[in-house]
Image (tube, rainbow, N blue to C red; front, side, top):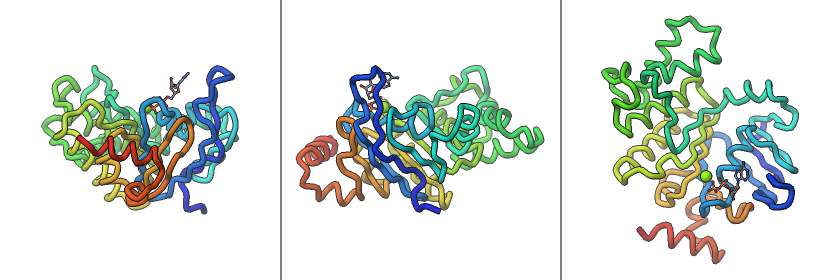
Length: 251
Ligand SMILES: Nc1ncnc2c1ncn2[C@@H]1O[C@H](COP(=O)(O)OP(=O)(O)O)[C@@H](O)[C@H]1O
Ligand SMILES: [Mg+2]
């Protein structure tokens, strides 16, 4: 078994047949590690995540996730494949007309037909408690709880199926500094409390990336400019990395 949870080999992607968004991505994401993907806006970070989730197919190159070559999977296989992921986007993307508890029950209802209703309720309760949400909020609608609680609910939902891989895309973009730190800590705690889980976080926030990530990959113009530990980034001589690091840490 590979030590990598995710491998991208020379992945290229064009949407219009001429302009390449990804220009040969080589990236190995270690199993059990928390990896941050950073880079200026529009460099292809979200497109890379969507390839890993099998939502986009590469124009060329290979993607391997947990030993599975994604090119071998048809659309039905991909739906099942995605159950191995928990995903949290910038907006928690909760269902507005469902309670907090129902939101977390949703993936269980979809994918765990083998479990009794009672068992699913137990699991949903447990996930909500694990992300630090007080049970008094479980029957509320998303509009009736704070932004921080909405993030916790989104994370509980992402954890519902006990995923092997957790994916975060700009989880703190648009949040105030206090909430940002809370969410960053939640991501770190969630990772630490699940030995073996692989976490991948796209972030524009260098402070957070360098503080909580084991490894960092910087994307630039559709390629991986640097991959290494936070230390490697501080010590890098690459002009573009130095510029990005000094800019990102200057606020
Ligand atoms: N479905 C799509 N069709 C066409 N272009 C796309 C699509 N998705 C993303 N792009 C383009 O790919 C580039 C990288 O986007 P993205 O990965 O979202 O950047 P970011 O690094 O900010 O997450 C952008 O120029 C974007 O317009
Ligand atoms: Mg993005």
